[in-house]
Amino acid sequence: MTVDAPPPRADAASAATVRALLERAHYSREGIQGVLGASGDVLSRKGERPVHLRRLSGEGPLDALIRLFLLDVAVEPRDAERALGTEELEALAALGMVLEQDGGLLGAVRLVPHGLVLVASDLPDKEGVHPDHVAGVHRPSVTLADLTVRRDVARALDMGTGCGIQALLAAQHAERVVATDVNERALAFAELNAALNDLKNIETRAGSFFEPVEGETFELVVSNPPYVISPEIAYVFRDSGLGRDRVSERLVGELPGFLEEGAFGTIMASWIQEGDEPSTRPRAWLEGKQCDVWILHTGVEDALTTAAAWNRDLETDEERYAEAMDRWTGYFREERIDALAYGSIILRRRSGDANWVRSRELPNEPRERPSEHVERLFTGPDAAERLATDEVVAASRIELVEGATLERQLRRGADGWLESADITLSVGIPFSAELDGFTAMFLAQLDGSHPVGEIVTALAREHDAPEERLLASGAEIVRELLRDGFAVVSAIDSGTPAS
Image (cartoon, rainbow, N blue to C red; front, side):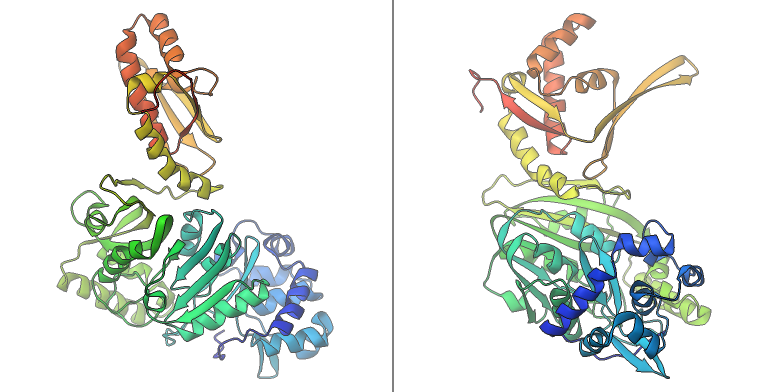
């Protein structure tokens, strides 16, 4: 059901009343899942509304709220007043969150719990006719949130805030957050969400890209801009109108100028794939920007896959869906775009001439406490640089991080049993790596209790191997573990220069 509603309003008194109602009703991820008998993200599953409706009792405030704000189902005004309360219903109306249509009461927004915050956004635009549509929390939003460094900061910027989810999360650890967007409707949602979550440290500013904060710098910048490579200007949140991957090139290039020294920025981006290495093009954008950079690419798609994915809302109308795909693939052919890459680009401002750029594929798996790992991806290379000589590595106590798992397997082959090993992370970003036998034995002893030199000496004696060669190999393994966030330096024994 599509409801053409005006932008919501952020009234502090009404927001406080609604917030109290939502808390009393247990309108949270756990509360909703309990009522619907579901697990995971119940909001992302298409076609399950009939099942969810049959699980509802038809009574109580949580039932009414789920119908209004998750399932897009009308509620009789008298039933809504009885379940929610007269004052509460008036507050919802004052905020623009409900409206009457054809004698029934409808939710005018989608309201979704995300972690500890509630996020309101527009209802799905099933007709595709609202350029200022404000999308809710989706996969790129979650990825951006996961890959943001969550340090306490004075000032943070959410550029292209949309519904405001990144600003809400940043407000938990920033004294002040500036949220910008060219879409006035998006700013209205961001202000409503700040009020619903009782966050008073978010300031909204209207304007395109970085224009509203020209001349300012921040300790944290996050951005989920309209990065889709598209022939359209259908949606403000999706289509930049700049063509090709110019919007990503421009914003990735401009972002460093808004970071304070040592500050972090994370931006979602897409780019035209060139060659076999997914990170080639964004690497070129970042040359000379005085930032250390991680490029975590999420995948590469061919033109037809991209066209289908970004027009899937039209799939119920087969003719319109086919027309849209033909329009998009025709554009890609004209621009000679065969493949498109997606990813997150994380920057740390560091002046000097020794900046580095690293890249890896971002696994499509659940991430637990990823922010800690993201920060290690920058402090780890710093530590690896301090362990420049094998002598310093030998004196270092190295510890694998929480969630590191070593698995050793025996596989039967044509020549008998073959041993292999892997290391994976269950806490942080779920990176993994294949290991040889020596590396697996070496890593199994990295618990911080002994210097690397002692571990290498013991392994050399046990396997009658040259200690100097094993130390050189072990030292490089340690540096790579640090760079990818698998390990940390717990101590460096005294008497060894920390060059």
